[in-house]
Length: 98
Image (cartoon, rainbow, N blue to C red; front, side, top):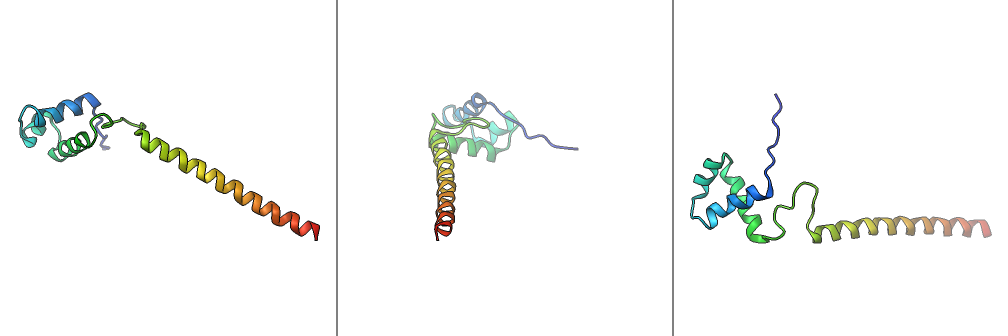
C-alpha cells in the first residue's frame, strides 16, 4: 500500500489562503472543509504572505533568485575544475622542462 503525495494547484492554494485572510474563516475550519491539514494551510499562508507574486512556483520551478544562485554555483564549479586542470598542466610541463 503506497501513499501518493497529493499535489495542489497554485490557484487552489491561493484560494485556500484567501479563505482565512480575506473571508475570515478559521484555519482549522477552512482546512477541514477543504480536506487538508491545518498545518499545511498555515504553511501556505506563510509562503503567500512572504511573497505573493513568487509563492507556489510549482514543481521544478524556482524563484528568480534561486535560479541565479543555481546558475552561479554551476559556473563556480566549472571554473574550479578549469583552474585545477590548469594547475596540473602547469606542474606537468614544469617537470618536463627540467
